Image (cartoon, rainbow, N blue to C red; front, side, top):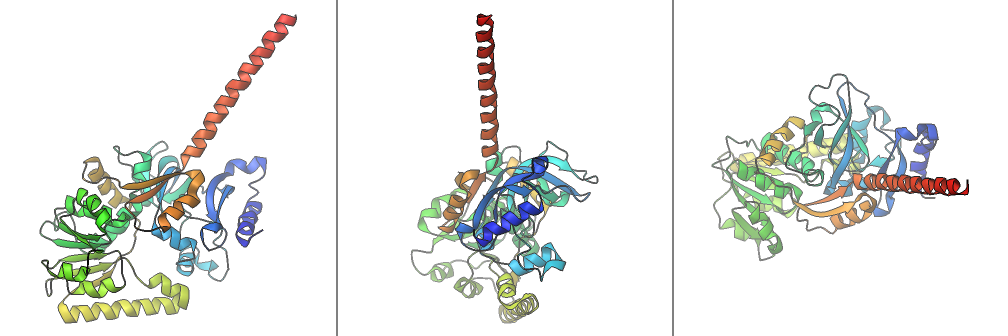
Amino acid sequence: MSDGDMGLLKLAERNVCSSPSMRQSCMSAWAIGQYGTNEVLRYSEEIPVPTVSSPSDVMIKVHATSLNPLDVLMRGGYGAKLLKLRRDPLSVMDSGCEFPLVLGRDVSGEVVDCGSEVTHFAPGDEVWAAVPPWKQGSLAEYVTLTEYEVSHKPELLSHTEAASIPYVASTAVSALVNAGGLCRDTSSDKRVLITGGSGGVGTFSIQLLKAWGAHVTVTCSQNAEGLVRGLGADEVVDYTAGDVAEQLGTMEKFDLILDNIGGDTEQQAMGLLKPWAGAKYITLVTPLLLNTDSMGLLDGAVNAGFTLHTKAIQNLISSGVFYRWGFYVPDGPALDEITKLVDAGKILPVVEAQFPFTQVPQAFQKLEQGHARGKTVVRVTEKNDRQAEELVQDACREAAESEQDMQGSAKLQ
């Protein structure tokens, strides 16, 4: 038996989930018992249900979720040290205490229970949310979040469609609004460049910025041009058709760059921004978690902070450009505003692929192939619906057989 299987088994034993009397306190989920490749993913029906333990908690029955690149990274141990500290500051020295770990950062589903202080939601409400990386994820039947992390689902979207949006929306809003200073009232005269624009964050950001009236330029491969133009991109640069920096250099300079790629793109981007005009460079590819993983919590955090400070000062002094890092931030109220834009037809879900709950490993494989054209969605309730249908069919069959037996007995009498 592998170490991952042992991790799942130990937790099942500790929670006595295999006991018939306790079975209602357990749920189906895909979890990992150790970090690694796709082989560490394990299906279990003995994962404890995340109950309402705080007055502000909202328990959600998951109908659908979607995968993000972060899920693949977390499966391999990315951010393990810092996320473990965020989950439980007292458990930093306890090796393996985070297992079994359920991945999945998006949820669309139905409220089944609420804490005593919850005022905006009630059982039966259809909701969506982005699950923070330090919490148990949504590749499960149930997930529990705080009221402030949850929002009412757009009425125009199915759960499968809705599950494609929350995490990328929260990440994009945090980057563009909190770090970039943009909003509906300040974007109409802004020129924005999005690098790597055909993925989840990119396709959402295009639509949000166009809803706010910005001029949007996107870099992507030629076969994604139709997608991003259909979402509203004003100009598209094919990174496979030559030197991207050279192509972008012929254009008018930008007020803001949202970088989804990192690496050499960062150096090239600085010369594309308007100098001494308050322009901003926001990257979603930061070294913080990599540093804390490799150097330890303190040294990694200090090193990352020094890197950010140095680059920010250098760019501000040399060209008046603001250099910033963008991060996901849980924000239910922000999703409320996204709900309005979705129901107004300003933002559409971009779903590239769908998988049933039984094929989560295949969904991860799809995501790992790269070159995303939107999101990969997992339909969580499909398995349970099928089980319910089978139970009904079994009950009907048993009833029919019972009736035949009674008729047979009556004839014999």
